Length: 551
View 1 (cartoon, rainbow, N blue to C red):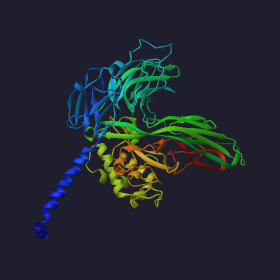
View 2 (tube, rainbow, N blue to C red):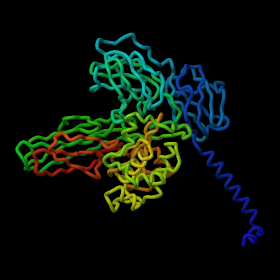
View 3 (spheres, rainbow, N blue to C red):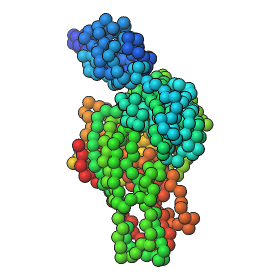
View 4 (tube, helix red, strand yellow):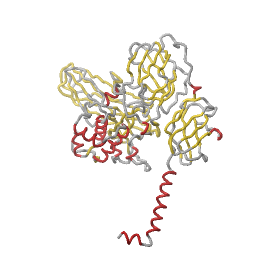
């Protein structure tokens, strides 16, 4: 048979044709790859100094391609080197601070932040006003995300209370660097990431938060906002950018009725609020009634007293937000293979906890099969993701409510996927947590949905939606036809996700005699949803998230 094929007069022409097709396919693939920037060195420079841009698919020669630095185009003679993976160029004299991008015939690259050293603010000699916080020194002056730094100065307060430390946000630049009362373009250090290590009146030890970039640091207390001090975020693990934006107005709430019990009774409700962050900005929330506590790790606490049997009690929440697409690009060879195991973030997010069975024998066995001998945490997380895609079949209603049973039955919904991915990452020594919220699809419809994220030392959190990667679909959910869902949903997230809780929110029981109420399949993940005292019965209805408007 083979000899007959080889002797056929069509064999060699077909072989040549196949080789030509492969050649053109490979060249077309190479041609249409967009340029990608991994990092720039240095990230801070004066105009007239040179910077080097490291990445891929720039093209072997410039040929009409260009670099833009904070929107400015360097002159032709400013380019000292141009290769497919490296560009050296002088910073234009009129460049400000902003994104560096590479544009060629294939398209534009991702952006990486550049800071004009002339924009670094001058340090004040003391507090602006008596009692105002004053930031005198940051040590070290540069460090990667997830590193410990020490802030020294005056009037920070002996306890943190409502005070906070702000860093310049990744992908945003604080253009009001000389306005000491402005926190525009800045992000707070995170409580749920345990960024605050210690707080004193003259010294703060803090971990550089996820989403921080080179730029100003400020401290806000109940007395005012401190001066700005420049801090450089280092590390070349990769980039995190925020792309397409969607705006939403959402509404949800709780109805309580049918109360029966003692005259002096009470009911506590823990209601999630739309989380604010770099991917969810300009969040505004209006509630009726006002909560007793407005922010307990992202939850609002409502307390109802002396409930009557014939009355209906309502809690209503309306929020407005802008949701951005998350795009991460990680150079796996630059990923650190170790974690600071003494850090609270690591200890908390690698441990088994309520709903996260990281110590279950079946989870540990599956993790070993998935990971093998791999040491790189990024590649281990990718192996776990691919293992779940291969092992599980997506079902909107799996046969069991137990994620362990789902694992053994090779099926699961988005809750199963997110919990198992989190548990397996933790079993592999990778900090991870599930996220809960809604997915918006069709004409303003919303479905409760779960995904996850894992943490890389020196980089931060990386989103993963295993269910969407495995083919879960909701109506005419907007999937870009040019994107492979399997590749896209490991490290990226679209702008149709709305986050309400990150991780399992650890609500503590208030009354030792209180009766606790749980929920499953809701748009949040928390240890306690309701706690009643003196009530023999009542009915609670948690209204689904409704999309009132979008833009």
